[in-house]
Amino acid sequence: MIKPLSDKVLIKMVAAEETTKSGIILSANSQEKPQIAEVIEVGPGITADGEKVEMQVKKGDKVITSKYSGTEIKYQGEEYIIVKQSEILAVVE
Image (cartoon, rainbow, N blue to C red; front, top):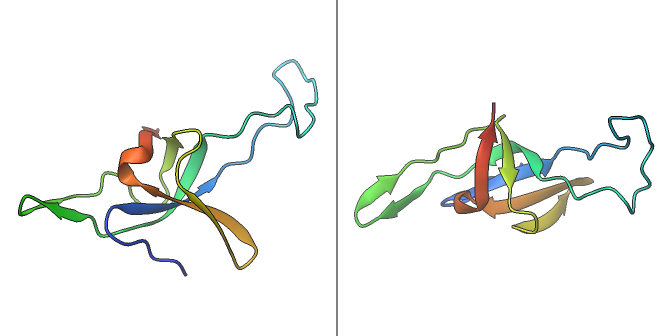
C-alpha cells in the first residue's frame, strides 16, 4: 500500500459520466476530466512554526481537486494521484 508523507493525500479519481442528463452518450474525447476523487490514504500532517497542522480530510472522503494538480502514479494496475492537502479545494458531503 502507498502511505503518503507530510501533508500529501493519495486520491483516486471518480469515473467521468459517460452520458449527459438528456441521455446523450459522450465519446472519451468529449468527456471532461473528472475533478471529484476519493481519498485513499492521508499523510500524518506537517509541523509549521512549531505547531502541528492537522489534516482536514480523511480516508473515504470525496473531494474536489484542482483540474491538473498532483502527481499521477500507477500502482498494482490502479491509477492514483498524490496531491498536497492545499490542492484539495473542497469536501463533497
